[in-house]
Amino acid sequence: DQQVKQNSPSLSVQEGRISILNCDYTNSMFDYFLWYKKYPAEGPTFLISISSIKDKNEDGRFTVFLNKSAKHLSLHIVPSQPGDSAVYFCAASAHNQGGKLIFGQGTELSVKP
Amino acid sequence: GAVVSQHPSWVICKSGTSVKIECRSLDFQATTMFWYRQFPKQSLMLMATSNEGSKATYEQGVEKDKFLINHASLTLSTLTVTSAHPEDSSFYICSARVGGGGDTQYFGPGTRLTVL
Image (tube, rainbow over all chains, first blue to last red; front, side):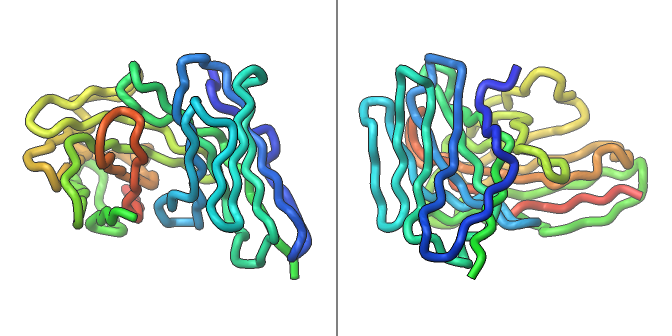
């Protein structure tokens, strides 16, 4: 049972435009959500997170939106840069489940110059 | 952000041998560390949760006698793959959590294990 789903395995965007990566979840107990960026053969790098008490969190070019009723979150990157090309994983955790992270399958973002 | 290191970054071993992977939190104390495994082009799968001073909690389907975890201090957790076989070849990644249940996990750079 895939509790966190990223239905788009890949996304291609032109440099300077907005990249929107989507993530859906099924477990209503999740109360903390994170986005990680990962290069091949490296560990994930934390990008941005959001608590379930918020619906938006912004950090520079990265904004995460959370829609609890739809059990959906998205990561917006604007403007997109070639260096943003990587695999992006969304992850979710529930405080009453030990805080362990459940990851989506990842979306490979390619930003073309 | 917090820094987590892993050692070694890659290891090649013969079938039947045991391999130990270290995970260290360099600039913070981590009461909880996590061990993940990633197969090519797949997501990270949580193997176990490691709490300092207590036994690790393993996810369903993960053999605790095969993947030994020790969290002897607030900055070090080790994963030992015992009697490794080729199907254990994978990318192993640890993470450390700074605070309580909702806090962010910071990941190590990963260890590529190849069992011949």
